[in-house]
Image (cartoon, rainbow, N blue to C red; front, side, top):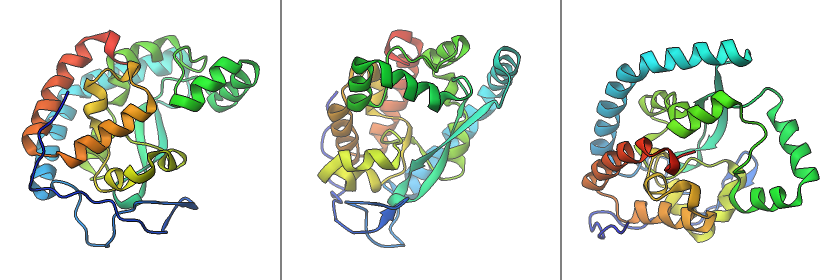
Length: 239
């Protein structure tokens, strides 16, 4: 999907040497008072959409939480450290879809399966992930596992629409486009979501994130939100 250039937004791609969790943050947007992409208009849309969606989704989240407790025990929520606006780290929330001890299971799986190791290196994802529970597969297919990120949006750590939230280890893979990522809040949805995220390789995902930032407009956000509803209903396009 192509977006027309938005002339009110200029590209930010400046280099600094600040650190994110001890790692260089190439392309970090300069200035402690710099506003995230879209300013108050985008923030107002985020608050309106996220607060409404959270109220509507709360019954589903309660049912999902009960099912997680019944089927696998352990914590209901999973918090993973991600890189936010201007390189500030934050805890990104999801409903837990993996077994406990998932990191050890991943390492053991990669150690005995070279093809899985290569898939993980290229995409940071596995199509056949041994860590994911049966209920977790259903939650991921429906994208219900990401509903707690509405709280991240209301807290100002994420936006309803934006680049895919990434971990600090992924930022160097953005290369010269890291500045685009750091210029805005990561999104609950985005171009990567509506462009078939299961079928998009990592380099293409980076390009979609940069394309979104360079061509941002409030209208584009509304279009992406509308397409997200359609995409979520097509389970073959989500994971």
